Length: 545
Image (cartoon, rainbow, N blue to C red; front, side, top):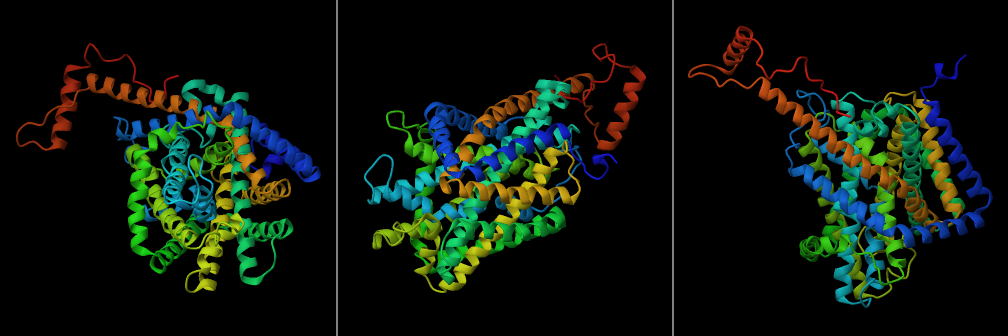
């Protein structure tokens, strides 16, 4: 019996991707010390030689999506002209946020501002000025740039799949540049890169998540912190994630995303009310102003006169992480955004999650900074994954809020694993959104295995290196994707303009309805025949190549 009778896979993509991943797993698990040294060397090399490319690429992505937001292409619908969105705004935003940020935002919302406050890149640490700048830098890493990266992939996939009828796969975004060659070796290579980047991007988040869950359990139950406890947590939570995988998007991911959004908002509101509320509101306004005011300069800052260590550990790590995550998040938000216009898509994905992110970061970050300034070392002396629970310890209902925080992290873990396995499976099957559930379970389990190997091979440092290294080749893929999308949009508008010139709209006579005007115009066209400028054959709706 043919293996494809029971499975739905693209062998030219699936097997090479699995081979590369298997080599990594064997190397990382069997030679952990060597792997850790290799990861360090790779990260240093990328930071030293390709940091400028990361900075320039991400700046270009943000400029590109802002252009689309205000361009004449904004009214184009992601699907047929009469299509409607499948999900309400509330469910849409909840799924966007859960897939796009999730675990990492919970992990770094306290830790990153504290790190920048204690050890800022451009000033003396531990000062009020350092606290203000710490929030600006944190906003920068979690703000518009991250969502712009996701928009590039998500918009391209949604447009070419839902409006042009191509498979929902990364290769489809290159049809304007490659034509039918997307179905050949070049297209296979693009999807293999996407699978590799997605798998390691998701594994990075899963690794961060279990590190923090372990810290929470140690805080509540004194279980200790170790790699093997974290690997056990990965195994347990991954098994829970398989239930959501089997349930599918509507029953699994959507319900978990809505539940998680409610829990996350409740936790943020509790910290807001129990913490310095007025100070948080004042800081939110000030942080936003500082972020927007210095956004252009910060976007292109690369620490050219320094050693680049801070930039490599923070900004380049984030840019690599977001780019590595972009096939996963982009394909997922494309799948849930059918029927929305380009302007609605760009505006919603760029602005709404970023607004909530800034409130979340201010609530947790500024509250932590206030506690740190009142009692130096109360948070900064702890391990990164323990900082959130140290903040909650200084508030009422510590045990309850710590449990809620862990539930939020676990739910983010499950939605990330579920969404990631769905996306990787679609890539490995040539863009089929309805693959056998057993395949999604396989990818969910593999994500847990890769996260475990990364933890064994260096912990947080290995996770950072994996993000930076896998994001580098895909940054070039995203850049070409922008040009391909722009070419397709321009082609569609030009075709529409030609049609209007050939068949100009007839203005209704006084007292005549629009329907009557349309019928009269059609009758006139039949009576007089086509104009001299009419094309000899209908204009093909396909993308120009």
